[in-house]
Image (cartoon, rainbow, N blue to C red; front, side, top):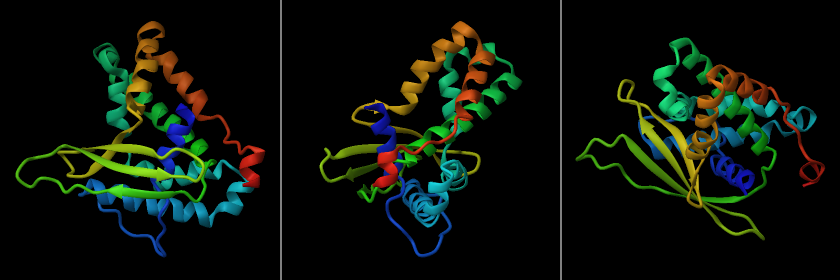
Length: 217
């Protein structure tokens, strides 16, 4: 169920297409999610022959088209959680780098499930009368023969740059960030952050694979 959840989340971040790439508006969280999605899947469709020949091309697409709009640093610090005061700045930075690459691999593998799904976004304008630092971008993914999935992209405003970045995705009441925090925070406490960092590095290096049924689809 979790695999389908993350797959749906990534699919929803890019089912629309644009004839040309557009400059993503990071000053508006709703525009950012939709525009980044469009560009990522434009490229995914254009490079399908290369992807079928070498699925690791998907890692490049994710890194180029989606990663710039993911606040992986904030997410990494949330995953470290209560262990943060016990780790050095160097340990923290190495963990953030490993977690970033782990996310790239996770998302790239999910991209192998891409189909021509229908997606709709629900836009809510930010309230100009109050300083909002967190926004929820709601979306629905519709696929023939499968139950409709509702997703929420949680975006955070960087007060220093004025840019928004996605730090979490929630589907069917399950938070990706909370799931990773529950999985890794305890491991960091038990085994130490260095060992968990190495574990994430190993997982990030796993090659992307496409199942036979996915190639035939």
